[in-house]
Every structure is written in C-alpha cells, then in structure tokens.
Length: 213
Image (cartoon, rainbow, N blue to C red; front, top):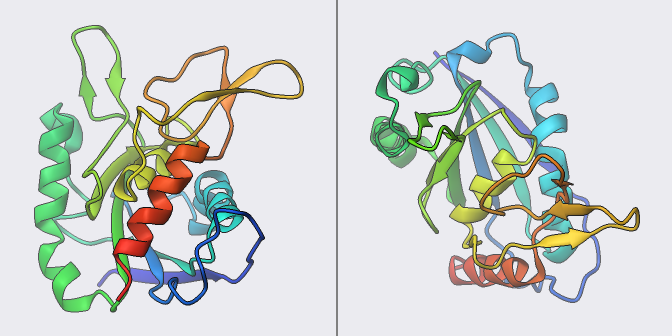
C-alpha cells in the first residue's frame, strides 16, 4: 500500500492580482509522487526545499487554497525506470498513463495536478544538456528532478498555464540577476527568484479561474 500524507496551508497574503475568494472555491491539490530512489528523503525536507517557496509565491498573488499530498511506494508509478528510457516525453507519458486509475478513482474533487519527483534528469540531449523536467501545458501531469530547487515550481507552473515566453530575469537589490519560475534555461551566474513573472502570475490566475465550478 502506498503512503499518503497531507500538508495544507492557510496563509493568505494581499496582492493586486489576488483571485477573489468567491472564485477560489476549489482547492488546488498538488500530488507529489516520490520516486522509490528518494526513500531517504522525507516529505518535510522535500517540502521546505522545493515547495514552500512555491506555495508562498502562490499565496502572494492568489487566494487559492492549496494542499500537497505525498505518494510513495506505488508499483508501476514510483518505480518507473526513467533512466533506461532516456526520453523525457516517454517518461512523462508513462507516468500519466500509470496513474490514470488512481487519479480517476481516488482523487478528491478539486483541481488536481500530479508530479513525479526523481533524483536525476530524464534525457541527455545532443548539446550535452539534460532535460530536468517536463509537464503537460495546462494539463495534470509533470515530472521533475531534484537538480534545482526551482524545478517543481517550474513544472507546476506549466500545468497552471505559465509559459517560457512570459518568464524573465530580474535584477535584485544586490545588482545580480535571478530567474523567475519557468525561465527556459538555467544559467550558472543567475539565482532563483522563487516567484513567477507578473505575466505568468496573470496566466496562472486565468487558469485557476477557468477551472473553478
């Protein structure tokens, strides 16, 4: 049997782009599937390193209720042999297909998004770079490695309607540049902003509004 843990937040912050409370009635649930290779990684550590800054960002511009549910030890899902595939699209499709029955029979009524988290990347490209994550745009499935603390926010952003085109770099008070979530390529001399660009914030608000009853 797989283990499911729930971690909900109630912190709401004011912002001009905030979703009206009347619209944000459906909870956004992020189902995090931890690959079996992450057996030594606790849900708490994963949350504070990879998801808390994303959740804080979401609460900075929406009134959306958010819940994170962790899934472990599910044969056929958390043991996907992604390294043998060396193909990100194939791995994402395999994950999407494998959890279909679980999703339709056991997911609560809400805005459900699912992401498989692995230790390493999924595909070595001809230019020597590695695909570290992939998502169905405005869809329900994504994969992300732990190679960057911003990876989960990046791929969840795609599922919520955020695009590479609307991502940007921002100059910080220390006069260095950081990359917003969903920026297409990481650079060694830029840090993570741990926020979405204003345009992608609007994209996410629109996506959530469209998925409310």
